[in-house]
Image 1 (cartoon, rainbow, N blue to C red):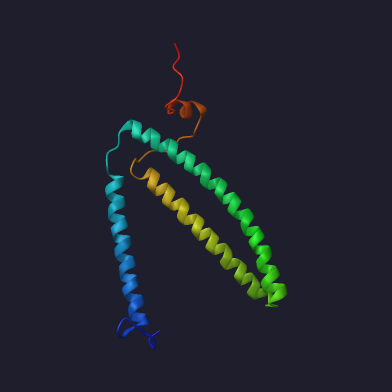
Image 2 (cartoon, one colour):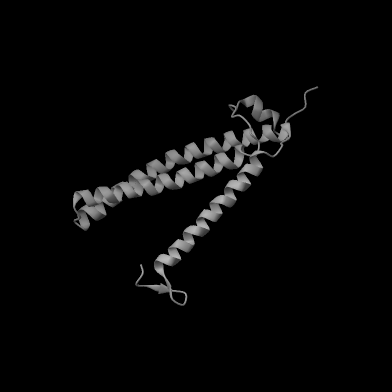
Length: 147
């Protein structure tokens, strides 16, 4: 990394260190904003809506997770066929490729789940409530008025 230079003579390792500093500053900024949102007051009706959105999104994420696992099974078959049969790689190398494929998929899913939970629950400090038909109907703007 020191043999390659970028941007008028900056070494690769120095550029990497600068990038890590920016990552740390971004993490610090995110932590500060998170603490401010966590301590922000919230109206009761907004908390209820937030809980409903949270449960809806959680259901969506679980469904997406199941779909991604099925998709990953198909991807695993393709990886084994291509790298194992066509490229004639050793079994341990094919397994490593499969593992890294799983790590990548799990990382993407983990980021989506983490973002969802922080974005929805942090500002409200709300507890998770189960979604019931009564809760769904209560928040529908087009519900019928009973006489």
